[in-house]
Length: 179
Image (tube, rainbow, N blue to C red; front, side, top):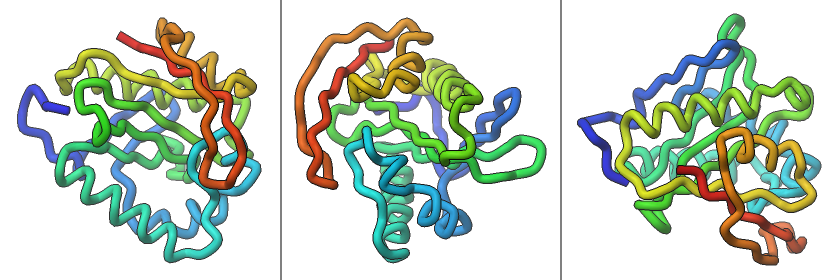
C-alpha cells in the first residue's frame, strides 16, 4: 500500500456518526481477549486467543504492520462513551495493491449496523489516503451480515474458495472486490 501523503498509521483516527476508529494498543488487550470468542471467530480465519500473550503478540504485529504501512489495525469504540466494540483493519502485506478489509464486533454490538458504519468510514478514509487497485473483503458464504457490508459498498464477488481456518474448520469463503 502506498499513501498519497505522509501518514503515521499509529495516529490515524476516523470518526463515524456513532463510532471512533483508532489504532490498536495494549490498552484494549483484555477487551480483545474477552470478546474475540469462538462464537465470534466462527466465520473468520483467525482463532480466538486462549491466553493473553496471544493478544499481546497480535497487538505487537499490528503495530509493526502500521510502522511498515502494510497494515492499519483499528479498534472500534463508541464515539460518546469510549466503549470497546471490536476491531477492523486494512491488510496489505500479502498484496499491497489489493489490500484486504477485515472486521469483527463483540457479540453485544451485533445487529446494530456498527460493522457497516466502521467499514464504510474505513473505506472512505482509504479512498482519500491510499493508492490501490481495489479492496478485497472476504466473508464466509453463511455470514450474511458480513456479506451485506461488502454489498452495501458495491462489492462484487470475484473469487470463491474453501479454506481451513486456524481453528481447523472449513470456511466457504467468497471474496468481494470493492473499487
